[in-house]
Length: 159
Image: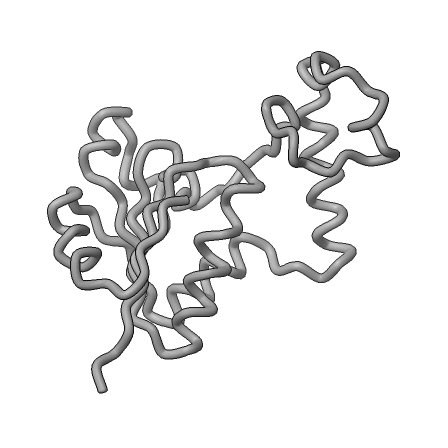
């Protein structure tokens, strides 16, 4: 029987969008899938050695707000200075309280499970990023290289 394949394109660089690619990839790898994640544009933030990701309630109407704020707090209020930092701190605390693994732990788990982490070379060049800012063990390649794998994958997700 041929090994199933999962291909993920990760394009977001915020705290709340960082979890899905790593959770889905580590789970698929544990189930025996061959997995590759292609990090492009803001998704490249997830490959940095030092993760300093934020979550923003602005433009995220599905985000549950503390103290029922989504019912009474004006949406425009989420743009006030300090709201993003406050929401990030609250989200990190909630995750820690619930025993959710950190992004670094999930990323390490993916690497241990041989999930291939691919940084989009075009985006690295576009944003003048230094490869020394990224974790070890990743591959730098273009979209054509990723499509070789994605074209034969059983599941392809865009996150």
